[in-house]
Image (cartoon, rainbow, N blue to C red; front, side, top):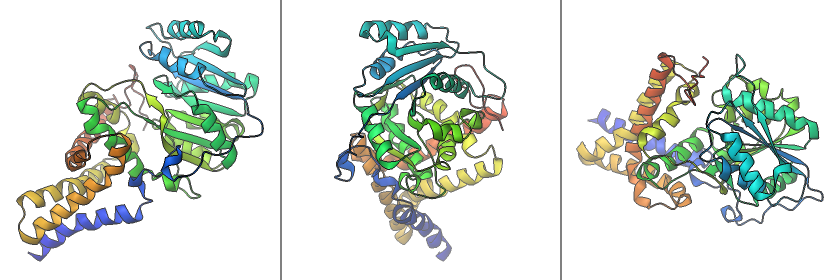
Length: 386
C-alpha cells in the first residue's frame, strides 16, 4: 500500500517542481506586448538600422502572396528589403510573390532568387536561407530577418523587433508566432505544442545569461555581424531543429530574446490531427539525438507524468485517488495561460493527459520514420542526419 501511495505521489511532486522551479515556463510571461508585464514598448532608436528579410520558400504558392505582402507592407522607417529564395518550387511560388509585389507597387523592394540545387550535407531550408543571407551582404544590413514563407506579420512587427534588439543589444531576437488554432485538431494539439516547447526551453531562462538557448524559426531577427562571427548559417547546416540550433549558436555571441507574439501568425491551417502529427514527428526524434535510450526514457516519463495520474484518479482508491486528482488539476491549471493566449475554453486543460499521450505517439512515429530512412521528411526530402 505504501509503495502505491508513493508511486501516486511521485507525479504530483514532479508537477509541483515543474510549476515552481522550472523558469515559470507555463506562465507565458515572455511576450512582445506590453500586457505581459505592464511595461511600455522599448524606445525607438535614434536611427533605424537597415534590415533585410530572407524568406526560404518551396512550393508555397497557396500562402506566399499573403506572407510576402505582409513583409512588403511593413511600416519601417529604415532601409528594408526582402529576399525570397525560391527553393526549386514547382507550383509557381516565385511568380505569385512577384505578382503580389507588383500589386502593392513594391517590386523594387523584393528580390526573388532562384535557389541552387540542394548541396550535400545541408538541410533544404538552411541551404535556401544561406543563399539569401549571402545575397543580403551586398547591401550590408545591420540585421537579417529570417522568417518563413507561411507566416503573416502585422505592419508594426519589424519596428517592434528592432526596438527590442537595439534596446537590449541583442544578437538574436525571436518570436514564437501565433499558430493557426481554429479547427478541432488545432485546439486539441497546438496550444500544447507551444506549452511543451516552453517546457523544454523555458523562455525566461533563454532570455537570461546561461546555457539555455533557443529560438522560434518563424520569426528571427539576427544581427548580421554576430551571425557572421558565429560562422554563418553553414555552422548549423545539418540541423533539423534549425531554429534552436541557431539560438544556441547566437547566444555565444551575445544576449538573445525569445517571446510569444500576436504580431505574427501562421497562415497554414492543420485540418487534422494526422497533419499535426506529421509536423511534430518531423523533428521529435532529432530532439532526442536519435537515441533509442532517450526515446524509451521520454515515453516512460510521459506515461508517469501525464497518464498515471489519470489512472490513479479514475481507478485508484482513497489517498491514491486524491493524489491522482490533485496532479491532474495541477497540470490542467498549468496549461491555462497558454489557453488564454490562444483564447480557448479553459476546460481544454483537462485534456492535457490525452494530449500528452498523443505527443508520445508522435515521438514514436518520428523514431519509426527515421528507422525507415524517412526522418525529417519535408517537401519530398528526408533530411534527418544522425
